[in-house]
Every structure is written in structure tokens, then in C-alpha cells.
View 1 (tube, rainbow, N blue to C red):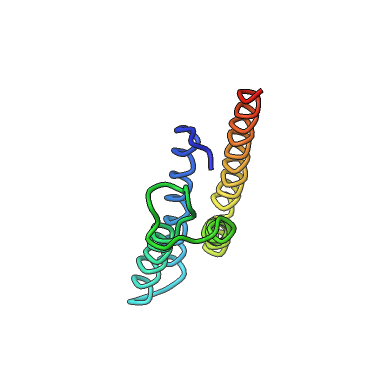
View 2: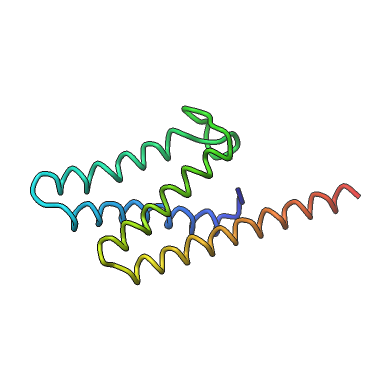
Length: 125
């Protein structure tokens, strides 16, 4: 993952928007006590999983260390789940904006990682 503060900040905002999207879906698609359960419970489960399950080198020490591929799968599940939830809650433009933001943020992270890798290669010559 890129250590560029701007990229990390944008990705953090994306994660927060994903949790808000899940809460919005829970609030708008359910009624009564079930509404509260989905609107609070689903983002809470997602945030706890996101905080506890970390790949080595992915921020502070992990409570439960998982392989990077599994962490990527968790990230995809959360962000794609938020996009689908926003579509289901009839917020198609928000869902499309979030999908584009997810895609562009991942491209920024890949570009920063590639630049870092090339710089390391060049400094070793």
C-alpha cells in the first residue's frame, strides 16, 4: 500500500463513505427496530473487521494477521458491498460516484507503489 499521505487520506475517506453507504442502506430499506439493527450493526461489523484483520505492513500491528490477498478481498467486499447497497437504496449516482472513487483511488495507490519500486531499483544501481 502506498505511504503517500494524500493517497492514504483519500482512501480513509473512501472507507468512511463505504461505512456510511452501508448504514444508509440499512436505514432506508428496513422499518422499525430492524432499521436500527441494520443501520448500526452492518457498518459496525464492517469497521471492526477492517480494524482487526490486517495484513503485515498494513499500519499498526494487526490483532489478527491475514495474508495480503485476503485483506484485499475484505476491502473489495466492503467497498463493492457499499456500492451495491447504495444502488439498492436507490442512490444510483452516489453508487456510481463511489465506484469511480474506489477505482481511481486504487489506481493512485498502484501508481505510487510503482514509483516507489522504480525509485528503489534506480537507487540500487
